[in-house]
Image 1 (cartoon, protein in one colour):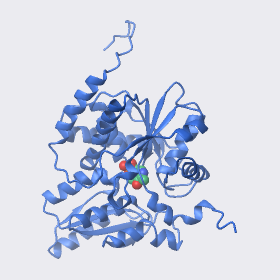
Image 2: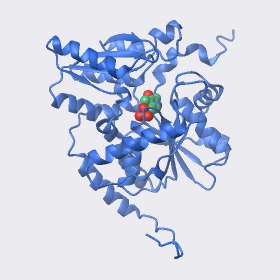
Image 3: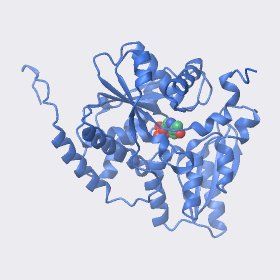
Image 4: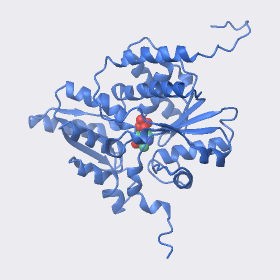
Length: 364
Ligand SMILES: *Cc1c(COP(=O)(O)O)cnc(C)c1O
C-alpha cells in the first residue's frame, strides 16, 4: 500500500499468463463444491457490431447466458447447477422456490427439478397486479406447468420466505423431503455459478486476445452480481463491473450485492476479501417498479431485436440494456474499448408482456 506522502504509482496491469493461472486456481477452489450439469457451458461471447456502430461508443459484446440451454435458458441455470447438487446431497425429493408471476428463476427451477426427477412447488407473488391473461398464464407460467410443477399464487407484499417455510413444513408432515431455494437462487451456493462465470469469461477473452474494459448486466436478487464481484476479485481482474438495478434503490441494491459477495467469498473459503468499492449499481432505469414496463426498456428491446436479432426481456435484461445504452450516450464508458453486456436471458417473459410493445400487426 502507498503511504499518503508518497507518489502513488498505478498498479502494473496483470498479465494474461497471471490471469490464466489465477483462473486455474479458482477452478480448483470451485471443484470442491458439488455441481450437476444443467447448462450448455461455456456460453458464447459475441460482438454486437451493428449496435456498436449505431451507438458510436465502445465496441459492444454480448455474453450469451440466454443460451444456457435449460428450458429456453437464462442466468439461473448456472446457480441451479450448484443448488440442485446441494439438494441432491441432502436427499431432497421436492424443490420449493418463489418468484414474481413471470419469474425466469421459477421456470428454470421447474425444468431442473424435472430433469433430476424431483417434484417442484412454485409460489408466485403477484407484484404487478396485472390481470392480463398472458401475464398470468402465458410465457414463463406456461412453461412452469409444462415442466410439471405445481404453481400457486400469493398476493403482492406477502412474506414469501414464510410461505416457503410453511409449505416445507406441510410437505415434511406428509413424509416428503423438501429443499427450499431462495428467490432468484441468490445465496452463497447459487452465487458460485457466477463466480465460475467470471472465470469462464476471463479465460474466453484471453483466448480471443480480447481485453474487456467493462461488464454490464441487470441486477435483481443480487446473486449474479455478487458471484461476478467475487469471481473477478479472485482472479484480480480490473474489469469494471456495473449492475443495472431492476427493483431496489441504489444504496439498498449495492448493500445486498456486497453482503452476498462477502458471504460467497467466505463460502469459497480462499481467504478472499471483497472491497465495497467493487460493487456498483445504477438503479435509475427501474421506472415505476419491478416488472413494470418503461419506454426506455421497450425502445431497447426493439432496438436489439432489430439490429442484432437478439431477444431480451421486459423485466431484467431489457432494463439493463436501457441502462447500458443510456450510459454509453452519457459518456460513462468514454475511453473504454470493449464493453460486454451479460445477457441473463428471460425472453420467455416476452409472451407474458405481449401488449407492452405496441406492435403494428399485419400490414396488409
Ligand atoms: C433473475 C434475473 C436477473 C437478475 O439476476 P439476480 O441474480 O437475481 O440479480 C437478470 N436477468 C434475468 C433475465 C433474470 O431472470
